[in-house]
Amino acid sequence: MEEQILRYLALFAKYPQSEYLSKCGLSAFIQSYLERYPVTRGLLNWRGKSLRKVLGFQPAKQELRYIVKTNLSGVTLAAWLALRKNGCPVLLPDLAAYGWLTETSVLKELHEAVPFDKLFTYQKRLEKRGELTAYFFRDYLDYVRECRQLGYDMSRKEILFPNKLAEKHIQNQRRIKHKRDRQLDQKILERYPQLVEKYKYAAHNFCIVVPKNSGDLIAEGHYLRHCVGNYIDRYANGFTDIVFLRKAADPAASYYTLEIYDGDILQCRGIKNCSPTEEIYAFLDEFKQHRLTKKRKKRAV
Image: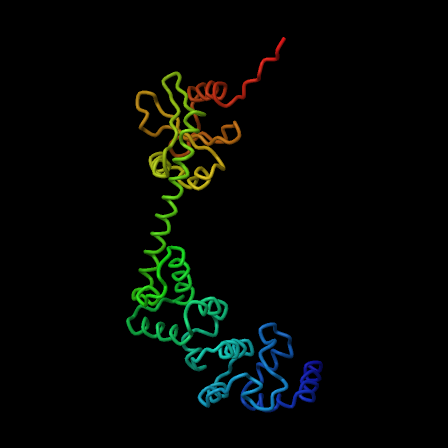
């Protein structure tokens, strides 16, 4: 406590402006500044001779009354100062009421796409319509990122400021997933001929089938009740190989699923992740011998 008092006296001696900042209700900010909170650094011009020059803007009387009336922390006041210095025209009571003071990191990125005044107007519009989500800023930032990813024209008001934000957010997610699935399917299709040549095999009433698209993996996981559907990305990008072991009499019906990597069968799972039978193990031994074991070249005599 004594050390803090000494630091305060040193600050007051060096910067007399500290006195009228405290009288304006900013004593909590000064205390946080003395305690060296990072968010408080660089927000004040200590050489300024007026409140406007020290803060970098002129607070409205309504804001000063609000500061005196409420017990805002130094960190909260720092968030307000940072927003106002960055050109935010929204007054402090509204910033506090609409959650701006706890979302400064999100707002910094949002400001690159949307001016603060238009963002506030949009927020109030959604509130009036009963469509304001609990995590509005983060949901809206995700929405803006998704629109950019989908190549939407962000200059159109109906795109930038949509009604029913939550619904549009979900629609964007579905479109991105569909777009991503198409891209993965294209990669799988490009791998397919090579994988067929590499793994095609049949013996003892069993055969190996290579999946042609992501839908094949999803269906396999659905019928066998295991998680092969989670391997679509890795399979499409060549990080692992997935093939289906089927009965030769019914090659369209799911039976067992194999994961193969670098010539080794890492997994062989049947329905509900059951292990292979002795009959399946016998087939796998032959499959490995004929398709996975690298044949050594005979030396010339």
